Image (cartoon, rainbow, N blue to C red; front, side):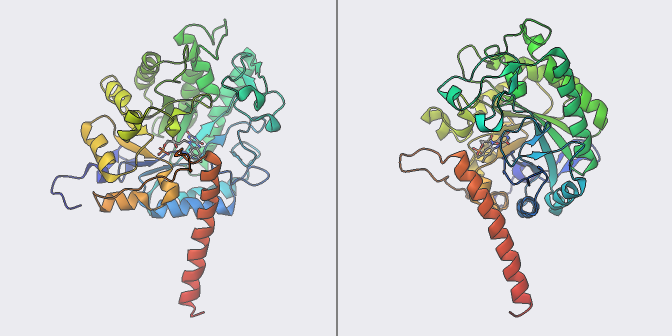
Length: 389
Ligand SMILES: Cc1cc2nc3c(=O)[nH]c(=O)nc-3n(C[C@H](O)[C@H](O)[C@H](O)COP(=O)(O)O)c2cc1C
């Protein structure tokens, strides 16, 4: 830092006396597809999160961990339940927490956003197919029964309790991007007429129940966070007004942090598929963050679009958010956090394909696998040097 003003990006954040985060850089969840065939973390996952921890991230969130083995969003997802190998999770959390990094778990159920090869009949709030040409790749879901909904709430809670047991510093409930909880929130996807559908109060009932049962399972001092859509960006879908009401309710209930994103598989605005002026501003959901800041007291993270030290500091200085969420820049450069902390003029550009479009999720997943090899190689070459080989 060359400036004499205090650097907001480097400022600590205290959730409580015992939960203090060293800076405001938040690594957002990225599905790594590095679970083994039993959906336990592999050594590659351990290596990857050590690499990220070495890079000075304040809070590092895992890729989505599934709460139910019968509902995977990717073939190599990690699952955490009573059948998991807890030792492999302990190794993962130890590596991800190095360098005083807060390593949190994102926990998720994909609902109907499961490609057809992985599940013949996924579950969802209602029998509504995915639109926008996706119905070809995603099987029609069946509607969950009341009993099944209650069982899923319990699964979220027992998964969160295991997260605490294996050493994650907090949990984040994935309620964004069109997965199960987000399907319940959306009037377009949730057509139920029972206590889980209809009014916003009913549509958010599952999220409220999941939060409450997790809180009971992990106790009052353990960070419990939520990733929430600012909106689904679909006609008739979950709107900004509704999102704000949900956020207010969660704030009243004592949620420790809300991460703001937006979009679904049907309209993936979280990856920057939006109008140029929004992209140019660097933070896709900044305007919404500014509004929600006036409504809630809980810690806020805004994610999507950050590429430079300047953009990240401007967002924090505006007061709109307490943390800046970064995903793809940390794949392009796993030391991106260190870079922007050290140099106020630093930044990077994400690679684009020949048509100027963002590279796909599959492209980033393969880059993530590349990072595990890169990290492995540098370690080997260091050892070789020490040994004079
Ligand atoms: C490879 C990849 C996997 C992702 N997986 C998840 C995930 O598991 N959970 C989640 O909430 N978001 C996921 N995302 C979305 C990111 O967390 C983030 O919201 C999005 O990439 C926008 O931030 P960025 O512009 O900094 O990349 C993923 C993104 C990428 C590129």
